[in-house]
Length: 91
Image 1 (cartoon, rainbow, N blue to C red):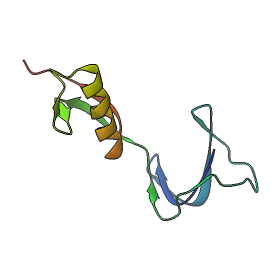
Image 2 (image 1 turned 30 degrees about the vertical axis):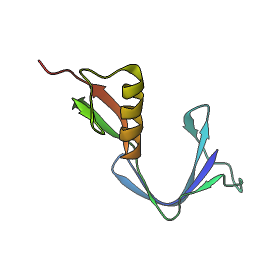
Image 3 (image 1 turned 60 degrees about the horizontal axis):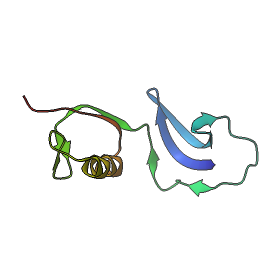
Image 4 (image 1 turned 90 degrees about the vertical axis):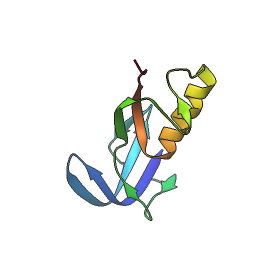
């Protein structure tokens, strides 16, 4: 999948007018003149946030959440830019 961007951020650097190539879940070099599958030129592109300690999200509590509720919590976090989270319990 080739993703075009106008502005992206990575490792503290601001990148302009480029593309990302995703193969098997990994970013690889972008081939010259490749067809664009997703154009994100109207958006800022940056790595996902990491929430290292959360008791829940989207109205759900990680202490008592079922598998389905944890799945919905994952969707809530993804919709808000969080790519990884550590669900914790309350003592």
